[in-house]
Length: 571
Ligand SMILES: [Zn+2]
Image 1 (cartoon, helix red, strand yellow):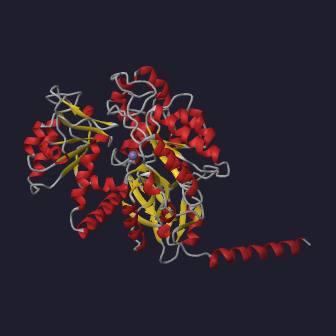
Image 2: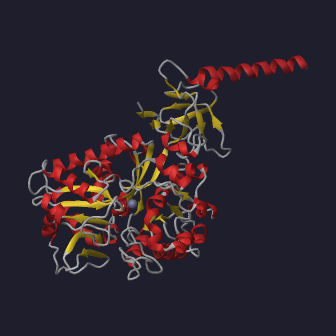
């Protein structure tokens, strides 16, 4: 009996062995000698991964992965580096990112004069009448205030004198305002007599003349004039330029380890182009897109435009966004329950009428779309929760909707638990806390900031889902910087902004992976490193999960892998 038992055991063993050795598909890609954070339920760590085609075949030890290596397998030695599930930036503006990388980058300008000089250089490269655009400036980043100084902002004179024949539009880092020169103001017909539009403001000098700063909805005519100019060029030229924006944005995403990008708002026309590129196999990054169109344009077209995993998993369109319910705090546009502390005449702006959002929400729930609307101030968040709640109550048969509120910078304590109760996702930007920190206490007052501002840890503790992202091109897409700011809340001057609200490293990583995949209904394909999931990985040169926090910023992305292909390798 004993003999027979052993014999049977041996046969089973042989069978098992032969099935391992001969029927295993060789892998196309193997990563080994790594520290692979799977983020699976057990939070286990592995050394190696084998990928066949576009999916993960095996996760385990260096030894066992050997079975998957054949002659044509690409084997990457990670040399102990940290690999995590491909990072998902949950909030950005893909085409604007591409465009911004082709305009003047004003992010690092230290004074207004420096910006004027940059525009002056650009004028030399342009023909009269061609627009000049730039992006990323913020008056609070300047070392000294502009002269003259109107509410901390410059007056257009110097800009107009270096660029008398080229309209100039310089987009504020928040995206909620632009600064233009005289030529642009003449084109769009803004002068002393022009009344402020609803939901916006032309900042004026003491004689009532517009200074060139156009806040919130007041910037729309300038943006439209620029868009008209852009689109007035021959169609092939416009398309070539847009395709260039797609490629340039992808290059930026690759370099930063971003494998999926939640794009918060494109028009039907842009989605058509992206779909065409997906058909050609030319979409370089996985896009998860929100349609950004007025409610009357949405109706009738939504079913046609709903796409999930189109183009081999590179194009999904199933959100309605980024309608902005309110403006930004930096421009006193965020819609607050009580007035701004440093500008008591205003509580901010309601940019898109509440009724329009309600109409979009109704369309969304009927067509299987997710709402992803921006709520910055506490009033905006409350209004959005009310709209969402109403739709959920009226449609009890529709469940698991995963609607989101974007930014959530200021939330009243009464509204915070409503996210968990309603199943609404907190979509935050870790880096906004530290970018806004130098001026936001002035806007909101210390107590209100402490009670309601950037409550990221409280959000996690509320057990609602929290996702992260950088809002490129508003901020750089860099996930390492965003991770660092999320876990340290350290500002560039070294001060820490409300340390109680720091995230743990695991929370911060989850906000880019597991939680982010959930927010895109993609938890079966992304977010963890497990057999069967898509082969998207981000590899860092240093272990950002364990090195001293102060060293996190010295880490870089070493490898970006999408669909089983290495798309970026640092030099
Ligand atoms: Zn945004």
